[in-house]
Length: 115
Length: 110
Image 1 (tube, rainbow over the protein chains, first blue to last red):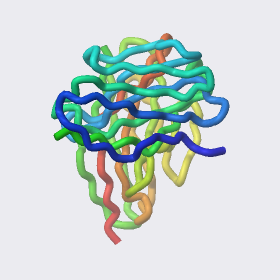
Image 2: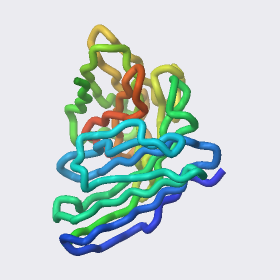
Image 3: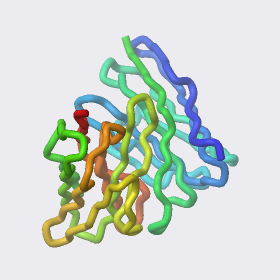
Image 4: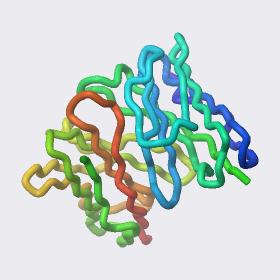
């Protein structure tokens, strides 16, 4: 099976712009989660989608949003970019996201740099 | 609230020596605990989880609810074990998100 695929791998944006990141989960996985990784804050949970519905959300401002499509692919959008949004954004998928037999599988991430 | 603490940012051991990466957590319920590993230029990947009670690449971890710990251990470190290790917690119910510790970079000295 192909792993979790994230595109693009690298992005450079300017403050105030918006950006969309994409994630294709492992085939058959219906839960997709997004994480932000920074040197200062480590790995922080953004949100989780399951069956096209946001099921859980972390403590990030409303500028961070996402969606999931019927094929389980997910996109994450960040509007009005700030310098502090520079980070590695990781996507993770799992079969159902429920129960104790559903570990997360991570993609390689998208490195976003805001200048 | 839940919290995962990895007290050591850096850990160096000699090849063949035992290694223990510490992880402590705080959570009022019964959590699931995981260890994830990130080798150089590779993606974050699951190493092991407490419910499996298995040994992966010679590593084991036992959930100690009394001490709220989930330390990762290996009796004889290998050079290929050099990597970043993250301990993570998932709450018992209701959410699929993981709470990660800040990670420990393990270096095995040849």
